[in-house]
Image (cartoon, rainbow, N blue to C red; front, side, top):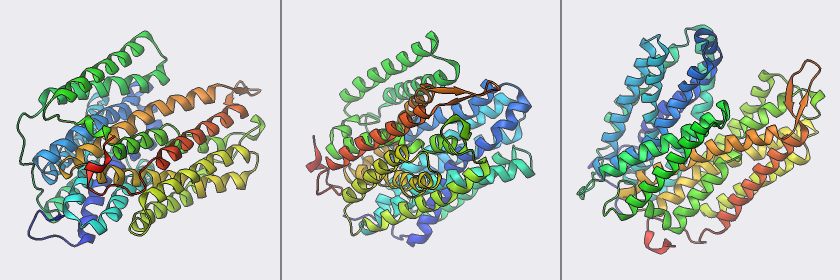
Amino acid sequence: MTKQTDPVRPPLWLLFTALVIAELVCSLESGMIYVAISGLYEEYGDPVAVGWLLTAFTLTAAASAALSGRLGDLYGRRRVMVWMLVIAFSGSMLSALHSDLDWIIAGRAIQGVSMAILPLGFGILRETVEERHLGLGISIIGATYTVGAGIGVIVGGLVVDNWHWQGLFVISAGMAALAIVLVLAIIPRSRPATDRTSLDIIGGILFAPAIAATLYGLTEGAGNGWTPFILSLIAAGIGLMAVWAWYELRHPNPLIDIRLLGRRQVRLANLNILAISLGPLLGPAIFLPFLQQPIWTGIGFGISATFAAVIKIPANVLASVAALGSGALSKQIPVRTLMIASSAASVSGWAGLALVSDHFWPSVVMIVVLIVPSGSVLLVLTPQLVIGAVPEDRTSEATGLTQVVRAFGKAVGLQVIALGMASSQVIGSEGTTFPGPSAYIAVFCACALFSVWSLVLMLRLPRTLSENNVSTLDA
């Protein structure tokens, strides 16, 4: 199959560099803001409003990933990626130049469109890179998102400590500007779809509010309680999603073809990303508080936040090596085998953590060696399953839809963790409340069970996976 869409194909290292820098725009924007939240609480005195800096980004990110991915498939992925970068740049500048919180939140919402860069990047790789290099390329830009979020926390900390917090947005704007230049200079022009008749405008109009209402309800329910309004909003979002799905199934040229989920490999890949997003991929929200919890509570080791961060550094390094290594190994070892091994490692890590939670170093080994790296490998290899099973002209759309599934899984998973942590509590002499030992064990076991689900899904994959031959994968 010929991948070339331009007479001149750039060297691999240049192409990968341009896509990595572009993906860093999204990952840095999603990570840097966290370190500024505490100071923003103090400056604006409204935790609910400040929380919208996170929520607004999440809502637009989830909707834009699939919609912009499909527009890239139709009108050219490089063209749409440049427009997404331009829009993200404008959002960063809006947040950087205004002190009013409402304008800053609006800028963050606009920044969220940068999430579309990841599925667009997958599409660009598929149409530009030779098949033998495709797995490595997917792993590189997939790992960039995970690693970039961690880098964003470090960069954000340096900015907040040594500069005004709005410098975060100046950096993200500068990164977007650099990415625009590199994408235009290095990435070949994409080949637009030849058939763009009957563009599904209504499908796009229904999809965005359905996603936003559901995710907003799930996100706000944990912080503000499950009020009748929140429950009604979730119900309305799910209802609108059902109407959207009904409409898309009947449209001759749907904007987002959910019939692709009928293909076995695509369906299993999306169920896998859902399974690991419900718990295993949320590991830092579980094991960092666990490591820092006071010893008197009966679980935890009472280490400082700095020490916990130091422990996470080798975990991130090992996760990055594992993610990139899996992409390289996929040339010699079947992706199915790598995914099964990673799911098994995740099961072992979470179950092991439940068993050795009384011992510090064995717990650290479970986290650093098994939990974090296995989650990273599962995250970066899942798009390979999707890409191998869909037509090339649906690549960005299909991988964008996977990002939406991941966002849903994360939103629900955070509620699962919150419920687990609230199932048992201990109260100190000064009235401080912490999750009890059984609460942490329950959460560890829940993550192990989600990992078992992932393992079962991967075992159900065909022994010979499709590689751009979708006809063999229908349900």
